[in-house]
Length: 93
Image 1 (cartoon, rainbow, N blue to C red):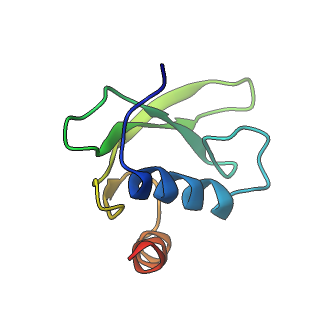
Image 2: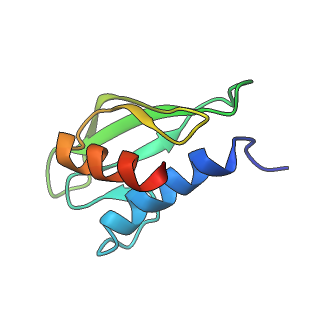
């Protein structure tokens, strides 16, 4: 069984992934870091944590959190610029 969330919330994560499609990992945020999806939310939103690479040996540290609302709007995403968040929020509406 997979993770349950709304189609719009998943579409937003796809748009984030497409914004950084130069990476080899599906949940990468460019050379900056990556995100991990957390527990399922009853309302269909997606929450999780954002991690930042700290050195070339693969070390990471938690940068913050993210939340994609059930309607697909990004309400929080540590490490993403306001312009990227804004353009994805416009596209998803």
